[in-house]
Amino acid sequence: MSSHNDVVIRLIPNLSSFSGSDLKVTTPIDGSEIASLRLDTPAEVDAKIAKSVEAFKKWREVPGPRRGELVRLFGEKLRAHKEDLAKLVTLECGKILEEGRGEVQEMIDICDFAVGLSRQLYGLTIASERPNHTMQENWLPLGPVGIISAFNFPVAVWAWNTCLALVCGDPVLWKPSEKTPLTALACQHLFDQVAAEFPGAPEGLSQVIVGGAQEGNQMVEDERVPLISATGSSRMGRIVGPKVAARFGRSLLELGGNNAIIVTPTADLNVAIPSILFGSVGTAGQRCTSTRRVIVHRSLFDKVFETLAAAYRQIGETKIGDPLDGSTLVGPLIDESAFKGMQAAIERVRAEAGDVVGGERTLEDKFPHGYYAKPAIVRLPAQSKTIHDETFAPLTYVIPYDTIEEALEIHNAVPQGLSSAIMTTDVREAEFFKRHSDCGIANVNIGTSGAEIGGAFGGEKETGGGRESGSDAWKAYMRRQTSTTFYGRERPTLAQGIKFDL
Ligand code: NAD
Image 1 (cartoon, rainbow, N blue to C red):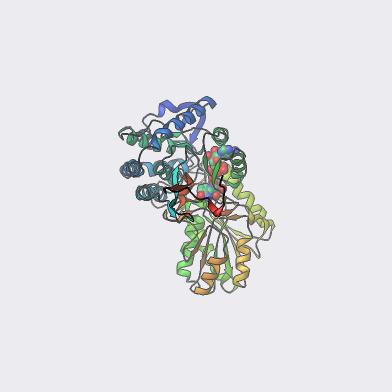
Image 2 (image 1 turned 90 degrees about the vertical axis):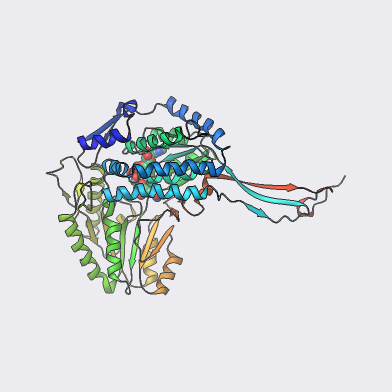
């Protein structure tokens, strides 16, 4: 894979300083090794946290708009290296190059957002009930932010967190997925170049911790890290959330999804079908917002299922392949265990009367160590138990409904609550859906995946309740302080009119 090595060397010229034999980094494209790294020792993790604490003391004193300027320059750096970084994303996590570019664009977009935000970290002026008093709510920097990220968005999620944290006055410690550490080292190298030339940027403003669950856990349990922003499976969140809470830390959890699109009788199928296809098959079904369930009105059920099944067959025959090849729409699964998880779910759902199209392994001749699966679509008479689990693969369940109330009941019956969508031209159904979907995202005539950075991103229930990226998500990275000042010359009065005179 010499051409692949080129991009690694260009983006991480200092790779040899991370080399070791603890962690083999492979590409899901063909399973070949692209690097071998050393894990951070407990002492090294400890030293990085200590350095972050020191960086915080300096960075919090830098004015917000100056902090924004550093993020602006980082955005420029990303623009200059977009193509290489996109290629590395594709190489390490297997998403098609077009989506790799989209992911880097998302980093650039959040840089721009954060630059504007750096001048808008607004507090409040509140009316005091007492004469000659002012009351304010101020937002202050919080401290080191520990970021744990998943393999499927190896760089964008870090950027969402980091750009906001930096303008809010916080340094970051990043424990990337053990499946995608190279993209993290590449981002770190780009960031270091910008920080080195920026007056006032302390050493250790952003640091990477190379490791897996154990190294992540060290950060989770360390009380010097006031905020842990963890993205990954609900299984991981169930472990991390209580540990952070036990030390009265703050956690921002972005966990698993089980997202559905409801197709109503008035849906425009020219809008609905492409949205379902991108949502369910795009990124090989490996997005937290991937469409896993399609809940279709019985009057359209056969037509929608057959149209989708034909498209799935066509994609399975002609559009799966090397994600670096421009004509590919579906790349590999991340690894063998993802493929096995998909097969196990297919077996279970078959036993629950599911009629399955696709799902077989493909391209085994060309890539014996790559796991490429034909997208699978399953016709089911009703929502079954298997569907309650998130299977991180291109596996879509199609379920019929009769009334919109029943559709929402089916929709909300799963434990996760990330993204949802309805396909309708009936404004009443659209509004009913928005009020009753229990998800953090509820779209109309737009699929479940592919969010813009301007909105707050996240979900309810087992998705963890966190919000990242746009809107007022920045508030998670700061501490709120209420401040009352008395400026009169007379004796100050007590709140609630309490008298306490000598
Ligand atoms: P994962 O849970 O296996 O790993 C995610 C990260 O958590 C990795 O960095 C891993 O090392 C770390 N980790 C695991 N156990 C830990 C522990 N006990 N303590 C500390 N750190 C620990 O997830 P994955 O397979 O990399 O990613 C896929 C999952 O992530 C899916 O469930 C997907 O829905 C979810 N995801 C959610 C979002 C979101 O924004 N809601 C975004 C992307 C992915």
